Image 1: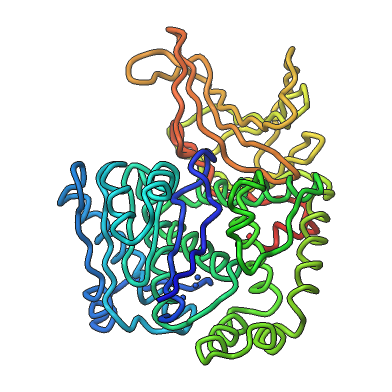
Image 2: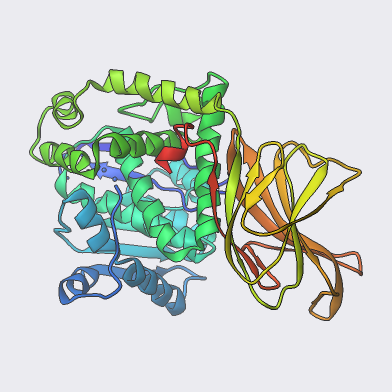
Length: 440
């Protein structure tokens, strides 16, 4: 029985990535990887689908609570139903998800699926998920929070459902749809601003590659590219390619293509029928789109803020590369504040006098500082400075962290955009002509 391996390009050493994903597909059996919606209630049919997913702990370090948590996430996302409704392919057979407790157990599990010791050892160190047919391996050490785990669970289950329905898909479509589904699952469980930042950081990494003219063509078989000859996460390019297909043609076109492939259609012809063009023409279009995004101008961003009545004072903005803080008076309520590229503010809140900073902001960070009328304390210690930082690259703004500097010299960082009753609820780029923004 011949076996084909389709490797993922997500690398664990990329700081903002969630779970990595890999698939090992039996070509003589069934293969890969949309956007969909979730329901707030689990129907009997949905529950029946969830019951076809067996989650178990494997190896030292994996616990019953890990299993319970994974099941909670699968139910919250309604993962099988989400994937089925999006790709219009059924979950035909039970899926087994093995939560792996440590690297050694992960390597052993990989070998049990047929990988040689060298492959298993390498993959156990830098992959966050692996699928063979209907068996999914997830190392908990590579999925440290629920956002990562939700992404990996949904990504890998997409591969498993493809494996049950389709004998062959080009690797870039396989992985591109799986990443899209994984991101959809992650979005269900993660703070909206934090998720938007993650999404933008992933997109920016590929836009940067395009700007440096290092983009590789989309590949039907990524094994050569993923063997170390490219320095970027190729799977993210696949993701943006699928996002563009969805933007231009809708999910229905993806479904039509997958349906044709499930009936063993010629792949190149199926692509033309579903999307109205040849793959190489689409690849040229995608390259042009990403290069256009790399050359797009930065025109600022609009931030949604919710201000609680407990915070009194001002909220000040320092645009990247500027020296003047522009501020607004804090009033309880929800507001939209636009920070232009030159640092000027637009919005409904009254302006306060600008403040010149002796040190300019760095070229890649926008700061939002909270300036209280009275003293603030953090766990009993006086606060000297606090606010939110946003990374800015290629015109994309992404939440980095919230900071609280204390009188004792310490600085505390938070991964969610809420401090002292002030929350950043959303962010959107002003430049609507940037083609990458339309895909996010």
